[in-house]
Image (cartoon, rainbow, N blue to C red; front, side, top):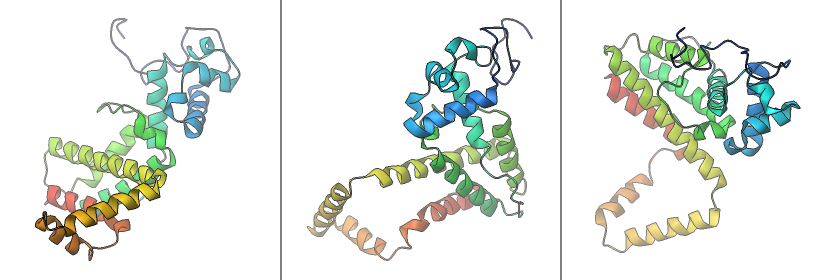
Length: 227
């Protein structure tokens, strides 16, 4: 490999020459970083904090990772690996991708900090590649071009992220404030200045349970995309 060629953590040796020797591994470093993030959020993850959790100095870690970006790549890939890809595909792209979306959201909710990792379209490690391969196999029966399939997967993952983030915010929300907001909306709709809003809200009152919203909307979007 050319010395000038950019590399990622996945193309560098597991253990480099930089920094003092140490009996660590990327797996141990990743596990320590995830423990920190699970406890205190993504902002708590730094080379110094991870090294401290392992009982060493930051210099020891530089034999295994080049810096925080490498840590984020490793952590993101570890979360991708928690999504069960052993579920057999049925041949129905909509239902198979919906099932994958549900499992992906579960993994993200288990590690809320994963939603704060800066999105990069090519942030893919070995487990992320397995995930993409599984999603593409689910789409094999769909009459779409390769580009359209990748776009569909990207849109699906964006939906998962939005719903996971909304669910987390809902858990933390001030119930009193939410009740006040709902009361204001109801009063505004009833005032008569927004008749379309009032009619829509009245119709929405008979809608299916909000708990089913994620699966209903993902299925609707996938059905529209895949035809």
